[in-house]
Length: 376
Ligand code: ASP
Image (cartoon, rainbow, N blue to C red):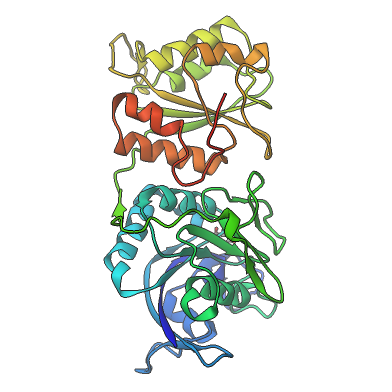
């Protein structure tokens, strides 16, 4: 039995080494894919003509294809990279049964969320993984993370169920990509999905829980939406929030969508200047160029503002407290229990792929299992 898995390297700690080869404590920087090959199970060295494949204990084979983008620390990842990653996977989609993206952990949850939205009717697993320590380090977690990702992507020969989703495989969990968030900068268990159960657990065995998987989109063709609007921002409230100086951002002509990180269940200050600014932003009837000049100009739909919670766990329920009624009445949408990563990338994707009232409907509906479907 054999299957084919495609690996795309984008950088991150997994493929990093110290800047100064003679100083192990010098800052880590990304290295080319060729430098990793001798550490990656299934790969021979870059000069070998041998086909890359991983032989499992069962005797089954996973044949490996690979590619790389210019490797970066994932703090440098941008929406253009998401498009590049999506297009590379799309170009080989019919040739492989599963896909692995090797990625830095810092923004992995943004990439996994963005890819979740970009791939519609996905019927093969796209697995993101990386590591907390470089693959060349003696105490690395990269090899096990990579092998576990391979087991999920190579489901056809590993006996695991097909997960027709973008997922993060990291340490002891398989997580829905648009529910995951980085929870530790140093612990092996770097990721969690605080508002949704893991799709699977990884220990001596990998156990996938079929109850939590999205249904397969049988018979429907894959489509990849690469039009993302990155004219968005994320604004986190804090006591003493200076509404006056934030007007620049709320009313900026260059901003089409805002993720508003509210307190608890969607609560915000009741200060009239804050609420007036939110109303103007949603209506789109006042625009400030970031260069400074104020213009009054009606724009068709105003900005999409979506409220999420600063709490890692729980759901936005606007209307539960009087302090959330103001933004509800002014047209702010509920982000329910979305992660900040999912909310921001869903906003970019919605603005790029929908127009008018469809945008509101799209934001308020679960698209890839990123939020609890119903809302108050
Ligand atoms: N700074 C690294 C990155 O995100 C961290 C990591 O990969 O763990 O690329």
